[in-house]
Each structure stands twice: as structure tokens, then as C-alpha cells.
Length: 334
Image (cartoon, rainbow, N blue to C red; front, side, top):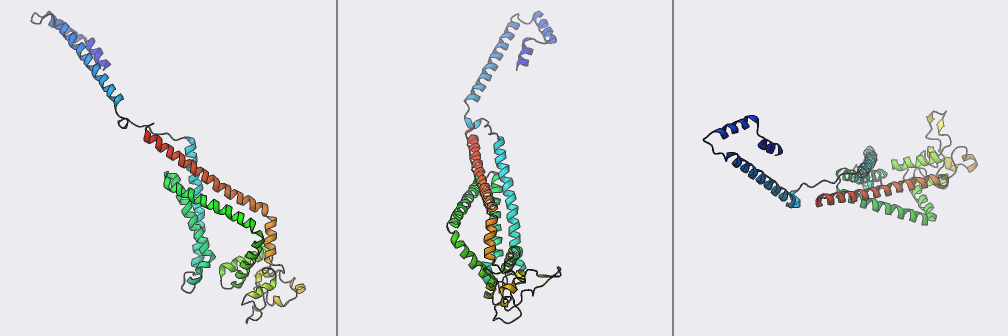
């Protein structure tokens, strides 16, 4: 516009020459230049008035017609978002691994077969697969909610995390208040595992690991294996009055070959003779000693796990507040 006005006020030389020739012509009245100057002034005033009117319309236009600025992300917002995403992604992978192990155990044992489907409810592999599935779904909801900034998924994730934290705190309080009864529960559970030692491969694996690592045999003593129908002294077969090979002090012959018959007739031996063949102490005492030796480590691990869950819940809450604030700022046009 300014360039146009400058060109109109200061005409080019050839235009000025034409005007001069027209002024010298006897056919054109002398008032011509004054008339053109008046027309130029009128055009300039009309342009300026139109420009002022347009500016007034822009200032008076409603808010929804103006461009609304978008609220910018801060460094804290990015940190909360991607830290929560990475943590949940890590735990999602862990949940998938646990789920895969549970399903592999169920399939390898043929637990879905018609003759075994009735006892699948107490299968440890089913419990492992269920835990893996729930952990995967929970962490996946937090992962997707953080990445997509989905408030519904984040609220669901935070609610479930709050329930889990509350349940863990209540379980810790209950375990501390019932610590005298825990020994009875452990004894009942181990005796039940020993009774089903030959029928359930998972219970057999757990029992063997406990007896091998803690160097123990039975719940309170090696004679507890009489509860098993195969190791009972009245049972027919070679296993009668015996104990599993994991109770033996040296189950390997010549250090290379596993001797599965090393515990045969061990229940018939007196303690002095049996101590050179099998472990005499029960596993409940070994478990108690192991807990006493590692109570600091157990407490530290529990505190770290609870702290990670609390930190995740705090970050989720802050991220929700940040998302809602940005939505409010965007909707209000600030």
C-alpha cells in the first residue's frame, strides 16, 4: 500500500512528461492537475478508512473466529509422559514372559486334557499364567494411556495401582499380626505338597528345589514322607519306606550319575545311621533360618517394590493433571 501511494504521489518521469504535454495542450482545462490531486487524496482517505474498518472488525471479532494458541509442552510434561511409558513397557514385557511361562507349563503337562481339566484350578502354572496376564493388561493400559494421553486408561491404571498398593499393605500388616500362625500354614502346605509329590510335577519341582537348596528332608523330619502313598511303608513297590533322591546327602554316584534309589528304605534307618545317607532336618526349620538370615534383603526388596508402585502412582496423577490443564488452556484459548 505504501509503495502504491509513493508511486501515485511521485509519478514516473514519462508519466510526468505526458501530464506536462496535456497541460500545455489548449484542449485540456488548466484545473486538471488540481482535480487529479483531489481524486488522489480521496482515494488515500478511502483506503485508510477501509483499513481502519477492517482492523476494527478483527479486534471486535468473536473469540472462536480468532486462532487459538496451543499450550506448549514443558520439559516436565515430556519427562512424566515418557518415563511412565518406559516403565510400563518394561513391566509389560515382564508380564508377557510370565504369561508365556505359565502357558508353556500348562501345555507341556497337558493340563487341558479331559482327565486333568478337573484339577486345573489348583495348578501353579495356571496361577502363574493368570498373574502374567493381569500384569500385562495393567501395564499395557498404563503404557498406551501415557503414550496417547488417554485419561480413561490412566485413571483405570491409577485406580488398579491404588488397589494393589492397599492390598499389599494390608497383607503385610496381616502377616505381621499372624506371624505365629504362619508356621502352621507352611507346615500344612508342605505336607499337602509332599502328599501329591508323585502326581503334580509342579509341586514335585518346588519340593525338590527346597530340599536341595536348604539341604533338608520332609516338613519337620524325614519320616514325614510316610504321608505319601508311594513312600508309605505299607505301600507296595520299591519306594516303600523311602524318601526322594533330593533328600540324599550325595545323590550322585561317582559325581556324575544321578542315583534315584539313594533314599530307598531310609525311613527304616535310625537317625545315627541315616545321617550319613540323607538330611535329617525338616525344611520348615531351614525356611525359618533362611528368612532370618535374609530378612534385611527381603525387607529392602519389599520397600523398593512398594516405592516403585507409589512413584508410578504419583507420576500417573501428575500426568493426568497436566493433560487436563493443557486441555483447559486449549479450550479457553489462552
